[in-house]
Image 1: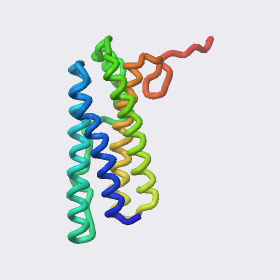
Image 2: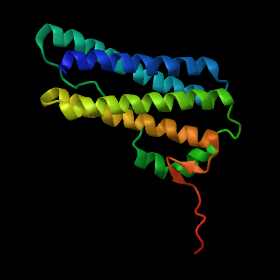
Image 3: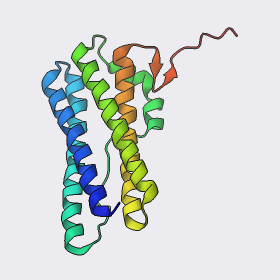
Length: 169
């Protein structure tokens, strides 16, 4: 798959997840949730902008640089180290709409990350570096959404790890 096709396909993924986050801001009542969705929507919009500019640049001169591709979402290690304080700031009552949007977001983030990973595995040179940055960024989004969904669902897991152990010592 050529770089232009990769970017055009990626653009569709990014628009879909951006639109979901934008709708989440309107759907839910929880202010903290709204802030998270606004942040993620803004970040996804920056990806849309990057990809649109990249498509134009590729069509004009055949190459693209990764400058300007970043994330404000912390890595999983930082999230894990701050879990206790984050738990205290998450409202006890999460609305069903929030869980529904988070569940949809998690599926889209996983699909998007997988797309970037497959494209990255097949790419070479500058495009591989750009796609590997997208993989890291989208994985952070996935981890954040999973963190929020785990809390909202109160399923006893945080980022796929059990909160407590049932083993007898």
